[in-house]
Length: 289
Image (tube, rainbow, N blue to C red; front, side, top):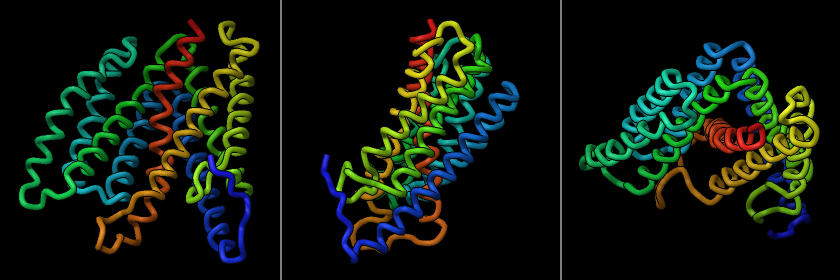
């Protein structure tokens, strides 16, 4: 970890822009987490609608915000994977993540068929394959919220999990907007204090929302909330690192501007929330028996 707490006068405009970005990410996280938490509170059908909306927005923002090569075919694959995962979970709600394994298995050959079908425009194949694969994994992972909602005490566990993820990320983003040091990387405006604050926020949510459950009473609720928030914060830092050290366009070409760039924060937020879901599912079930 590189310690970089000094800001020169030349770096002040960049620091202000980075702080504004962190506030934007915090607001987007609060919105996405709030929609999912409200759906989980209202019931299984409402949660399904919320998950489908987030999956669609994640697909569009990821493919078009990062200018993935072959994004039209990726859009078709994303819709099919999300629909297949949601349908499998709703049909076998008490089988955990097992039903979606078949969805991922079917997606593997389709990923290669998609690349072969690109024909003469088949460039940046590995980048396209990797980006679309990550998207499909995130879409399938997000369906795990419906698995958690159908479990015993799912009406308590699911909002608590989403609350820990949301609170941890929002607290971390606001902390990075004010004090992003010491940084994990000189080029990434994300610091260690934000992770600590995010973990504490997750622990507070876990304590407040899970104290009614006997299996998670005492310190277990705080541990679950803190652990979930820690995973979400680290994933968010990974998304930030990836965004800084990759480009929207291949070398020698101009990066797309306008809507494509504005969609990148949306993609980063939704990807972080989606990939945090499996870890939350495992933690809750491991501690609640």
